[in-house]
Length: 293
Image (tube, rainbow, N blue to C red; front, side):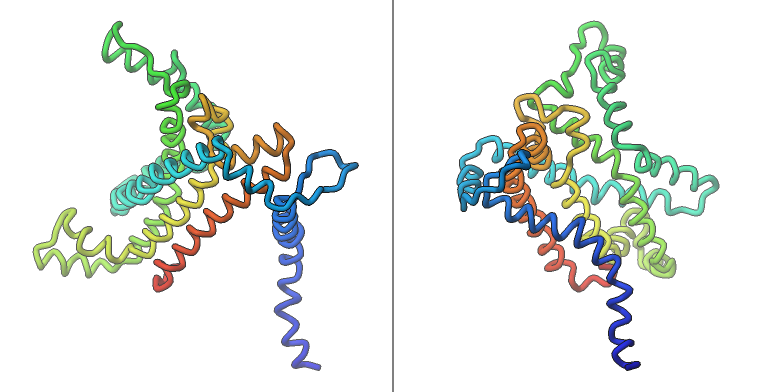
């Protein structure tokens, strides 16, 4: 009896969390997978109609979906390298025993704790035709300066939103790197200095190799976050102009809550899930030997 109780005890502790996850994550995910093979809307008096692969055929021929998928990959390629290396540079700068260094760390981390809604509204004001950025441009370049259409130009809108994502994430990833840097023994840097490796050279010889697990971790986290970006797009551009800043997650929202095409939204969501799953498998492939992961 005691042995049986010992075997069941871990599962009893896990039961509340598994129940909540089952009701809020696993069951809705299974429903979304089922709905992707049906025709279903918000009319609760109708049952989902099985249509097989019809939604997937529509997905393959949907030019807007491929546009949003391309935007998502541009977002991924543009944001991830910046969020991998810029926070590392900040972490190196604030990892010094200087007076008042805590204030600098707090200043860099402040954007993380700012609500994305507040940040989006503030940056939308900065990007406006009469916003601060264009006013500074006019102040520097004179009356001949033409206001830059940061959020209304198809060529600039997506990159303007990407800048907000980078600004918002710098402090968060800086803290991750800072934890890793503080785990590197100072003796290694002293030994490197004796061998002639000093200044930024020591970071190439010591910091980067020892920080590899954290680099992989940040790359994976930032990549998954970039593929799921929504709030910045929703607040700043609504996916426009001409779908130039529309991402896959925003397209899912648009199909489900604006056009009320739940089944097709689930199909698009399933495609996004496969993209995120691929990124996760790459993380397991390249980061399996890293102890921090």
